[in-house]
Image (cartoon, rainbow over all chains, first blue to last red; front, side, top):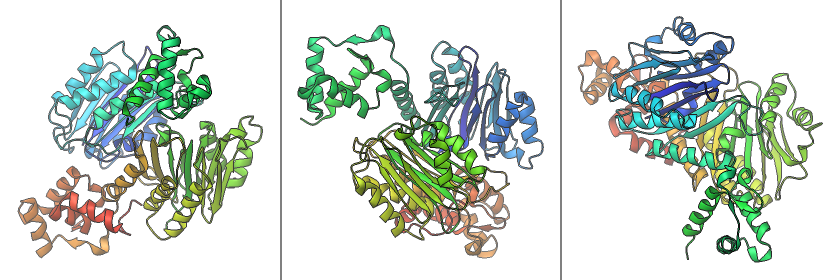
Length: 281
Length: 290
């Protein structure tokens, strides 16, 4: 039904799950986690309570292996379940019930568990692990995405594609700082859910990551003219006040995090240029 | 920035939130709820704290109005915030801070609160309330999403469209093997997010729905022959083959011992496409997630 990666990245102190499936809204059911506790992917004949129950066990300090045992041993349907877990210290474990639909299985390596069922074959999980390990140094969310992309390229869910999701937990990461959800992106029903997920990851980066000061472009005279023309085209009336018009466009597009007076973020400028190109002449 | 409805289903007691916005991933931030206790939409210059602290207050037995008071009292940013709440006794409250960007406001009716900010005008919220009331008796998730569509048609977020979501919690915690969210659909970034959300609702009904035991066809005699011939297996193996097939089709939530649900039979005999088309046109009353 599904292939997923569950991982802990010590460098960024982040826990994450990325998943894809031929089912509706896989992100609703599979990924669970919490910063400094661990992460869980529950799938196949998914027992959703494995998610919150697993995270509760992880919070109280259980290892990934003992969480898998604690969840599956009392469960009469364990033979139809699949589960991947990483714990607070980065230990990894997974479980594939003997009645999961073939190909089904998983591997663990260091702080990573990859697993799937109804797959094209074992190469799907092997490629996922390889892509994750090969992308060390990139942002964690992109490494998770690479893993799912590699699984898809290796055949993925043999029934086809429908949904995907990625979630990352890091202490104090959420909008406003109060919660630990750093990334929570879902593609619930789409012809190309993994291509779409990559688009969302890029967009998320654009909205929620502060600009790199080294890349900011000073708004000089030629650029002022270009931006003013673009804002005029989009109906923001820059002739009544350039800075005000640019500020309103930035507000409308939710780029407040990237708004730096007197300068413009190249990613924001690129977005403006693309938007203008899309306006009919 | 956002418009939402928070409501309780008079038929089942389930509580839900539907929301749309010109902001990415609105479904990840705005809807909060807990089976048996209530649901919350926190928006405008929203504070995620309002979500989890609001839920804790609802669990402690506070009314919707009291939760609004407790959250906003002492919060310097309260004038920038907007909230809709339904509590465990199905009372509702809608709060709009005085400094939310215009047009901003909300209205309450029996069992629902509709609110929004940065809207085209009061007509957006009025159209939502009117549609919600007009769809009394219809399946709850469908009704919530249609309410968003009415808001979208009445101008919606005046900055444009980007994301939408619907989330529904059971009336009471089930104590079963599953958690208590019975509908959870998101469109995180799209040109027509509310329309895309509405298009997923028949799929929600089909894939996450419940079987109708009284209308089921027993897997014996003629019924078993019909199913066995479609699956291409001997009659003796019809039930395990059906379980396997349903698992691959994501229809396992509709399986019944010794019988086949009529919706599963429809998919087996006509295919998923025609079954979804039928569901979109007819909006079946039965077989929704519960």
